[in-house]
Amino acid sequence: MNDHHAYCSDALPTADPEEAGLSAAGLARLTAVMQREVDSGRVPGISMLIARSGQVAYRRDIGALRPGGPALPDDAIFRIYSMTKPIVSVALMSLVEEGKLFITDPIAKFVPALADPQVGVERNGKLELVAAERAITIQDLLRHTSGLTYDFTGDSAVHRLYAEAQLRFRDLTNAEFVAEIAKLPLIDQPGASWNYSHSTDVLGRVVEIVSGETLGEFLHDRILAPLGMRDTGFFAPADKHERLAEPFVHDRDAGKPLIETRIAPRFESAGSGLISTMDDYARFALMLYAGGALGSIRILGRKTVAFMTADHLGPNVRIPPTTLLPPGHRFGLGFAVRREVGLAPTPGTPGEYFWGGLAGTAFWIAPKEELIALMMIQAPGQRDYFRQLFRNLVHAALSSFGEDE
Image (cartoon, rainbow, N blue to C red; front, side, top):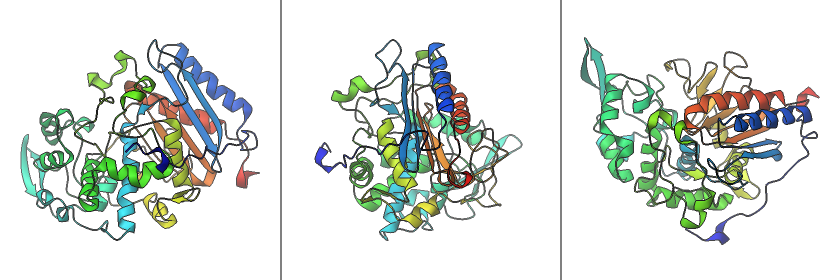
């Protein structure tokens, strides 16, 4: 796993900000506002990157690596939590491209324990179990319509069962994790509604079953090593510990412990387990932006990326009220997808796709604006605040570009 020769080592291409259609005043304001947030003690450090036309035109590291620690280095390692999901979704789709499975396949083909799921329905204050009307498919898992959920996304009877199961805090292997989740009822019928969930964790197990490798090995061999993402993985070995970013202790999300980053976990969570750096994730984003390839390294076909970043919910899938998927948005295969200019809380571009992580990390790719933006922070309790702030400031810094000129 430490074969550095396997990595693509080309430096990220860069461009002059003004020539890339970014205003000097807008970028200065972005830097100043984020410096203000650090100076006010809101967050230890913030790392930011903006690329246009596949070239990095803005890159800043502000503040400290951890509370009272050294300055934030350009190779700081962050817990990216749910920004793991797009990487695993790409890994799964690479197997589809090889003819190893279809997204229409029922999950029971790979995980028999999920063959006959039951749906939890609350009637008169009691939880009743009814049979699923159809099978859960791979596509359901990719777009979060499986009927699985997370304990923290609500307070229904099913959510409470998830909380009692303590799935995230038990020392389970990927296979054991999926076996445990199969014992819990679904929150809705497969395909009926969008529920953010452990679906991607189950996909990680499918990747293992289909590939015959552990999830970590498969991601390394197929995505991380080819793209040169040398600091991305499920834990940081000892020689990288001094580069791990940490939040303020009081900024833990609802008092929950953050994932352990210093030792190899038994559970390689496909939904939330990876750590990464700004440059590493930028390489992944640049690959997506370029239609599945970074330089001469192709990870996915162009049409597969277009397929993944299209709306896979359509008009009939119900979206419960949630800040995770704001108005004007739908969901593809591993990414949220913007449909409208309006309705959302921040500016954006129809066709852009994105996701974020529990500790506040965020990225989006807007093909029509030829824009990639990335923010790395460790501030779990403030993720919505910083994501909205970053989006507003980045969009305010866009000057004439492309068709606007």
